[in-house]
Image 1 (tube, rainbow, N blue to C red):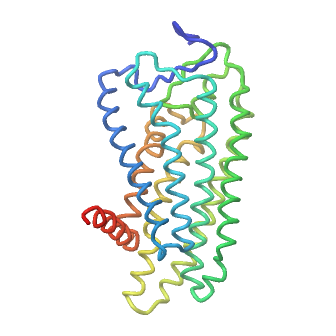
Image 2 (cartoon, helix red, strand yellow):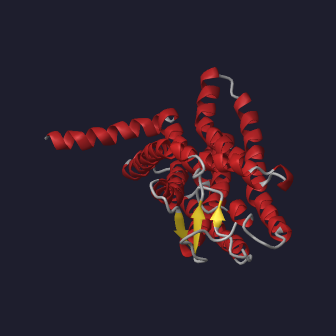
Image 3 (tube, rainbow, N blue to C red):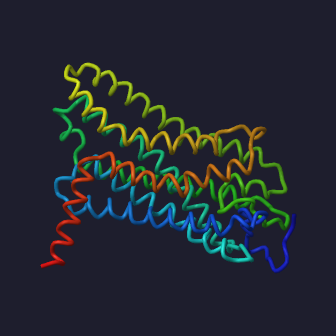
Length: 314
């Protein structure tokens, strides 16, 4: 399908669910609520971790990075998606689409590496507790954070250039809610097998390699936990990892489905739903998982709110 009425080659039309307009208002309300919850939840985590000195540890430093990442990811896609749901002309500029693709890819790659670093942090804390403060020094944490952010954004630059340089022969209708690489590759009017192969290789590096490191870390963690004699000690050790494991399952499960499935089994509709899950729902769930399951964050949040509202009353 070529350019639609009133469209230009300098914009894309994000189809979303335009073929089911009766669902758009319902989804608008749902996504708006989820976006607000995501903003409130992740901002609350960032502020609490910043204000509470007792939470200035490596684990919570990386958690604040995750919250900031989730905040940026949803902000890069959801506002435009909400605007398009209320508009008949569901467009995004060419520059806006490229920026959306670049930022979302960058943050996705960064989260892959960040979750692996968080698993390593838990490995050191449980398997080498006496050396934890020495190994996970502030300098090392800052270096690891800088490295994973730089790696994510550097890799995304290559993937974005490979995607947008493909000729589209006038096609600009993206069968998606936002500009994502698999959907944009569908617009190309040339053979994309080489680009898909390169994207697959990068996905293996940024998805399967970090996931493998996470699994190795947790194999050592499980072995160490099983050696703990007291049931209370084992439960405490498990609780420090449960939130991270839940986030890893949510993120890697959906990302692998989107980027590592064979082209023959690719379904655009299913991919759209999965993308909505890890792009809108998962970031909100991440903040809930860490605030509801983590007693330290939960307690710090109550203290900060108590000081805030207590000062207002006085």
